[in-house]
Image (cartoon, rainbow, N blue to C red; front, side):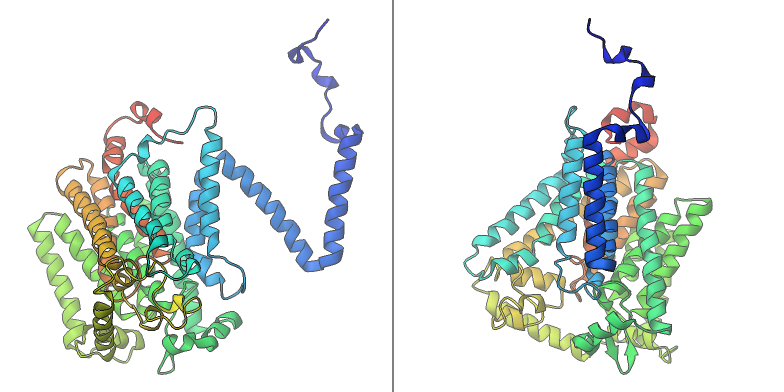
Length: 496
């Protein structure tokens, strides 16, 4: 007579230490313990580190495949610290960490919905089509007749792959107000930590790894007249300053939609962001709050608010342009040079753009993805594009992807920003959502303008934050419905 498993006496099941009565279990346990012991004995501290890394990795993978959104936030976290880790971990291709996490997140998403299948419909948006078009153009750069190095293309892969995959993941995961709040909290925490790290560098000093990085050539741009341009754990001071300004604009405007602890938190993030931007000594970063808040005032469609905002920004402009107040402060003095049309570095950039104009006149598809600027020197040390500074993000796109790529890139940016601005001003019903989407649009507008002076937009950590922002402001209809209708009516549409 067959006995079903449900009829089995539960007291007869092997549990806990009783499992060790099984010979196979004993062999497996002894094998694992022996391998760990040998690893620890052979490699000592490094072996212990590998054991803990392996255990952490296994736990992380288990949690990731249970809840794929963990991979999304892991990518955000790595996005902030990955390039800075290169100062401490030399020789490892850490840049592929983002690729790995995005791939694992997609796999986790697929396997976690293996029986029911993933509902990809939330990603069926025009921003996804535009991102796919851009990715396709970047892939075609592999057959660009001007391109000379596949390795160089691989270094520039992020502007195509990261844009597409992060837009898709954001549309799938960040589809409610609560999840949008969580994303902003994570972003805000890293903003505060980034500024705190910068304060340590400014007032206490850099650590050994950071000093080695400065000694290796970075001091030429990060120690000016004996004063440090703070870079925190970012790739450089320019990225640090612009990103902190970006964070400040988004957080301050976002705080207007909040109350209680959340309001205090985002105001605090904004203040830390402003201070971090100032101590970076990055002149172009000041355009982020100036343009960002001006954009916000326009989005409000209120003449009184607009007039007041223009008045405040005019005071800031006059302070930097026409006064010498607080020139004793190194950070303010350096920022003031951004308003000087006779600044020597500005003229150098304009001269470089003339060189690019001549070179690219017969190259409508550019010189090849990843083929311009300092990053290309290790692959093409003698190439023209490797030895002329691009400086601007848009000049870099122009040099690598040609006028065709630049027009496509700008077209995507202005289409997304323009459509989202229209939604904020005329379509979104929920007033709090208006403020939250306005915060992202304003911060992104500031980054777009700042990217004319520095290659900000496509570099970590600004890149993934910007791509996430593009997806969110393109998904206002879903967020507005969620905010204005009972959640129970929409639960089946969302991925938990």
